[in-house]
Image (cartoon, one colour):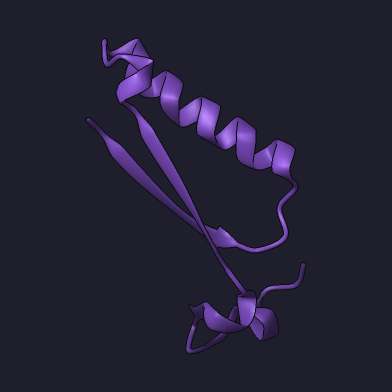
Length: 63
């Protein structure tokens, strides 16, 4: 039973997260894993809590 954890910044619409879940699930079903066996967990991290190049992403990467 695959469990996939996706870490991304907060603020993506529900429709985008749904497409991510569907896409990841499809990768596994394409190789024969039953859909009901696939779990996808999305962890939303505030950009202030995500470090990039030694600084918070909120200060380094524009939105």
